[in-house]
Amino acid sequence: MYATLGTHRFFAENGVPSNLLYWPDELQEPNVLTYLKEKKIDLVINIPKNLSKGELDNDYKIRRTAVDFGVPLLTNARLAKAFIQAFCTLEMKDLKIKSWNEYKAM
Image (cartoon, rainbow, N blue to C red):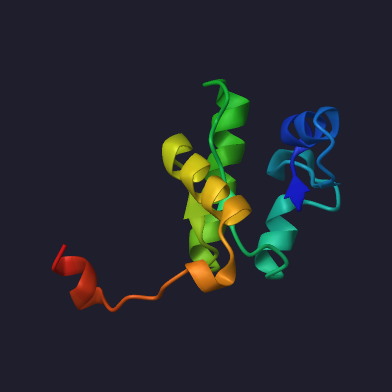
């Protein structure tokens, strides 16, 4: 799992291992934009913790790059929480793939 500095620190404080990636504007490697472009990241969860210009600029660059390179992106805190809970509690046998028509019938 990869994380930028604030999330990386949070994970460390809670015993969750992660690899640090630098913000887009830090121009250091390993940089989150490089990892997105090289398809080293399979999913981005990007939820700003504050509305500072620097954070919003970096978040925009991360989101834009994820979209441009076809990396799935979650930007809603409630959706991200539900996804993480499902990921941590369900097994592969519990996950069912439905056709689009099955969803429309609900």
